[in-house]
Image (cartoon, rainbow over the protein chains, first blue to last red):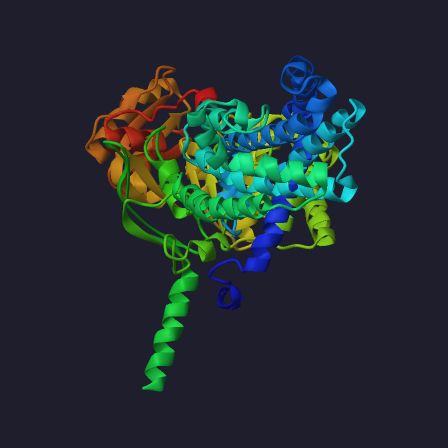
Length: 266
Length: 336
């Protein structure tokens, strides 16, 4: 009886199986989220506070009044918050991997990518939560994007997809780093220059020339510009393509790298 | 020609089904420390094999290599004929692993854990739920099914962990110190469960630092110390390979003891030790075939024997004799 079992066991999981198993792992992520809602602070309270703070502190100085600042700052805060939330993905993955249950995942005949992809997929719900909250708070403060709901939704989707792609970088750190705190440390080191040295909070032409050079090549500037033109003008600009190409490139490099390191690590 | 091939295939298949684990010279080093330093094992299908050794002997590292959790630095291992490195995905379909610490999800409930693993193993939602219910009942966890694991006792956690390993009914189960830190009653339950598995044809590789556990459960034992197998055999073989058996005699009249002692010493050619309470003597026996003659001699001298026994040495003594140091029973909290 055992012999027949040997004959049918496959050497590896198929693509369809890998996808199904990733979705099951994502479901696990959602269950965990429901059990530990305090881990959602960074995508709930924090974006609300940031939106209020930035608008009322810098609005007058940068755009004359806070009302005029909203079309500039809401896309900026949106990208900053969601990209920062993707760091937490790596941190939580590290914490999760230190627990005994990951031993079981490793010993199960499942696609190697599933535990990682599942965690990253589940976190898209966090990005969505942050996105909806920021647009809602902005709306209450008087931000009425002229692009209309469909373009706002497209912009939101673009940000979430890019954050998912970017989260593979932090997943990679999560897999190779020794502690969750070091994942946080390394990631923030990368993230602060990327999010602040961009067009997120102030017009680029007010910055010194040498800084403009960096800001203009910063991929997040392109993402923010894409979101602005979609939400505020209802226009699809080449920035969308640049952002998506960047996202694809990141995933292409870091997803296999993260999975390989995950497989190698004990 | 074709006949030869068929025969070769049949024998290969037979080998595959009769040998569950075949490991040759496994090595794993962590930095300069060779945690596993050339371990070879052969485990027959359908048996319980015990890896016995103190904390840090290399038991867990060995199991983790066999269970595809870490790669060996050197050596080879096959599970039912499949290489653990080259054919890891196949191996994973044939094994269940229950770790030293519970490898289940703390934040989920017992039922959610089992459903999750069953879903990952390809069961439909309905099948997964049925599997979870069946296992919860089998392991006495039905009442706790909807409680998150943080509220579980150590014994419940272990049971759930084992249940999770049995979802796919794998032919080989690794149990890494399944009873460390459990109270005696829960430990006995765990032993029953393991015996039940073996009755159903599952092969079990068990690690333990409890000598009595290996003695109770295992068909064969490898004694491991500092990353090496220092002895291998059935529990009985191990015991007889080191210590001699000892003869225990209890007499009806304490005043017979000096006379009996002289007869025993003459018959066995070894020194006998009277026990403190004065009615018993203990003497080492190299060859048990002389015992009947001894009994006849005692009877001829008119000495009444009320109790008689030949005891093999315990595995504690085996360990001491093999390693020169005692088996350290580490703090249970530390090893958990």
